[in-house]
Length: 261
Image (cartoon, rainbow, N blue to C red; front, side):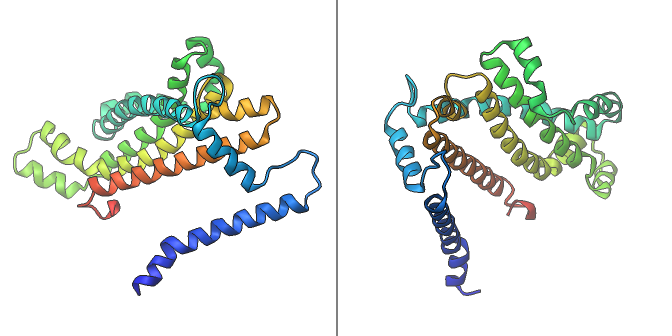
């Protein structure tokens, strides 16, 4: 394919699609007769750039609120990553661990993270711990499932060859099973990060005094739809950057694997 054609597909086309979306948005606002006063794209972008340099609430600009949200996500995501990967790998490789833990895990994993909000508030109060817990729940399931899938689908011929060469059980686990499961773990990390970001927003909308989720609720409390949509814009931008960063990290870590390209 001609280099210019690739550039059009990867750069120009998305910009055109975004421009068409903004144009349709502007036309709908101009032709609409709603009494709600839906803001135009220009109003939203003005509000967004205003929030970059002015405080939203008493303490932080939108950047400060984003950093608060990211700190919550990274803590819950990190703890879920460590525990979920360990549980998934051990369930996938050790049949006794699978026999004990899989029934409990299968019972709890269909429960949506938001269903835990009332219990989380009762257990941890309305401070930071309850938010960490909800984010942990949201990320723990995909981490565990994908680590389990990676560990339980290791090439049997590779395992057999390693045993014939005298590899011990611990060598099999750490030198073959764990590396073979890494591509699947990264796939789970993508889902876990997306789940964590969405759950964090819901947690901040319930109980918080800072964060991008709080920006939306604060706008709702004063009927400021422009602030609400500007907050949603910040959410979308940060979510896109997180997903892109995770894909870049996966590509660098799994350069040896077709799945990571």
